[in-house]
Length: 461
Image 1 (tube, rainbow, N blue to C red):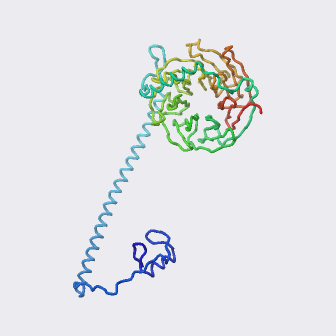
Image 2 (tube, rainbow, N blue to C red):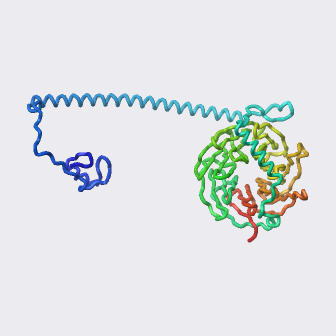
Image 3 (cartoon, rainbow, N blue to C red):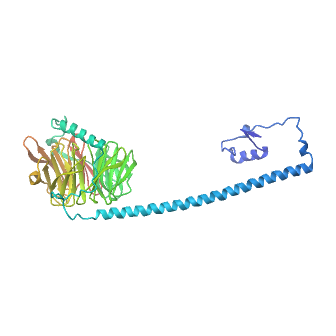
């Protein structure tokens, strides 16, 4: 019987179809109706004269057997050679894995040793900055930093408060609109983009929360304890206690950047949108090009770093140290431009959108210090705001009028009046928060506590 281009014995193929219902060689569905019988011609060509005698047939069978034996020998020889090649490849692979493991261990030991190096002396001009191994930005990215600075600084001076932006009167009437417990225990950080929030914690998972719908959209497995979270556009960034910076898009990890020898403690995105910064306990500042997902600049401080932020114009980068200093660097070269002192390990810092104010707080302190970037030394301290409780997180709104603070004792909103150059406190709440962010038009304030309970504050309905 004929099936496609394959010939089968009728009884065998019919039995196979009855048991399996498929074609043996292709696995496609087959029925008896698909079989075509083969009809031989009525006139059969006789055998050649050489195969009409028994001696001739025996000789033919002998030749066929010899060919079969030779083919079997060749196949066995090829099998033996393939086994030898496979064994060699496996030995080489095992050796390569061992070498990689040894090099990885040596690299980690070197990074650990580097993070423990103590600075024994300052620079000649009195700065304590570590100046070795400073990598400036490539020319292309440096040009982008300049262009961004010129564009944003020019428009910032005349930028009015957007129409419909929240007022102090509305903030004074803020109340908790929604409260939801998210699957992100031991919460450390919060990132907000539009009406969605990402909450990360030490359990190694992040929860994506819809502010408008008040529900958890999904959870994102990070695999490492999260120390900081940043959401910009379609990308999510997580700093981890194992020194990684993980980048997610559409729920999937698209990059994992491991440049820190210790925990990565802070993240910040340059206003150009293509330059990411991270700091860590290994005293390093690292800039990444998000297009190539590679390190493009690095420098080392004189102490472990706890937090960081880019200036709204992008030309300055601030890093807080465990020694109580806020170190300002030029973004293009990572040269130190200024140092402000808090006197205790820096907990959080944030630039105002007005371009000349920097808010910072130290671990355990109940106050927020406002620095004027146009001044130096002690004269740079413009205001010390008392919040009544330790501050763990801060967020300045887009207009530079309202500074939100959150800590174990609750939330506050501090208002700066440009006209009177005075500060006031339009809002205070006793709900604890480890992280907080302003929502769209300042109409909402999203905060999360250490247990993963997110609260959304807004104007009374």
